[in-house]
Image (cartoon, rainbow, N blue to C red):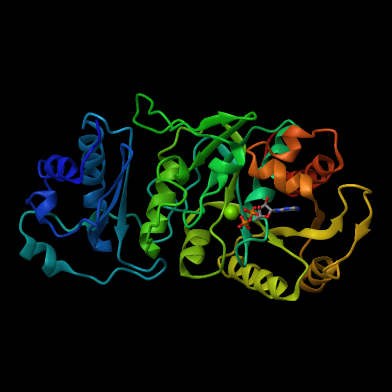
Length: 378
Ligand SMILES: Nc1ncnc2c1ncn2[C@@H]1O[C@H](COP(=O)(O)OP(=O)(O)O)[C@@H](O)[C@H]1O
Ligand SMILES: [Mg+2]
């Protein structure tokens, strides 16, 4: 049985907005995506009203999940306000809207670490770290997954969150095809693979589904993946960030409770410039940069093992020194890394005794050492 948009709209008509009208008449819904039983849309509201809408979002989600044939629903609440700027006072709006108390009076003070705060720690997770890059295609996802496996090999409990909503590649890199189930608290249960707890927006929407994400929607979807997922107890949650240093990435860096960030760069100059932007971005939001990794650092011939520095290797190490951030290591450009990644069997898992696994573990050890004090087990 296939679910239709019409069915979704009919269900949503039964949900009442804080303004007292049906959700479908409140002029807040984004286009609704229905694909293979998975439903995704956002509710776009004024930032000042966001808290009053949170329960509506939850009701809408339950209503959609109740439709026979719906296997997953992700409904993002997006607030039209740039983070860091105070919401303009709007006392009259609420009065005119009728009946709803001004939500601003219930707000915690700005910057407070209330459990509602987007910066609040995630219970059970000792350290959330971002793997970022200035541009796409530098091997960010490959590195994030293999690094997560390297950390696992060090005896840590590790999760991986694929937050690259523009191109979620973790389903492909891990070969995961199933959809996350919900627990009794209606939280998504991450998929367990290779001893990692894994969550990706790609489990809910197809990798090639062309989706136009606006900044606030990105944030909302990621907040939901961080907080509405039953992660359990983790030492480290590795977040595969969307590539680039635009607004969406900045918002993310600002709103996810990050203990640190790792920048992936290739040796080419352009990529290093992009890496510098990444560094500046994290510094701007006071997230410590744990270091730079040089990926596709040198070419290693799969036949004879000979090393060629085809890109003029070493740039990232120099750059790291110059910028005063740790250099975490260099990963060769090697056929085995690509083929294992693309077949859903990452190299640290498929060739645990090989040279590449050793490199990822060494980078993992550096990262763990830097998180000492944050991770109890480290
Ligand atoms: N060190 C490497 N050696 C060989 N291929 C690599 C390496 N790192 C990444 N790749 C390949 O490069 C492509 C892009 O990598 P990916 O991790 O998806 O990049 P990003 O997440 O930055 O877009 C993939 O096909 C991947 O298998
Ligand atoms: Mg990627």
